[in-house]
Length: 226
Image (cartoon, rainbow, N blue to C red):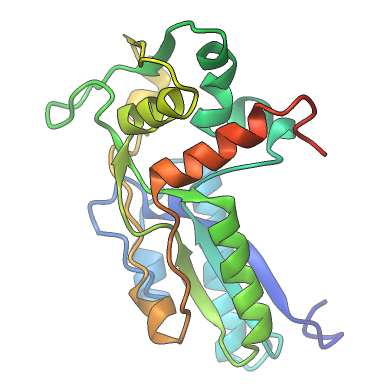
């Protein structure tokens, strides 16, 4: 449709395409590199398939004048109240943090990671918006790109930052991860942002503590959706 109607396309891919991360997090969009990725679930696999389709169409000269797939890492920030269980960890633990109650994180079932030490690339939604806006202002850039902070931090770091933003001492307990998730769980993600920067993207990522503080300020409002 975008090709037929001469419309640009910027779509959501996902860091889930990288699977367990054993092959790294390089956003190489050559077809062979994309096909080599091994997602851990159907969601990640569906994203990989569309990335391959987009690259294949571009190679045939059948892509829009500009197209970009963004591999979103762990996005957090305002206006995710509609996402239910898929909300970011900050949004999920905030009610208990605000009430002064302990929060629960998954225990690690990997010998190389402590409980709460599982690492993710947490990226503030404002940074994602900046990338999209830059792409809209830079119509000659197309391809599949990572959209993350470029720095992995632990879930324990995230929880502590949430407590700190609320002015409370951290209270964290650990629970077993459901067995169905254990073989499909990413223990480490960290976006390589080199390719996007090589194409001219100038933005800097929001530090985790700064982003969480801004988000907690938003969540603390009487009506955070206004």
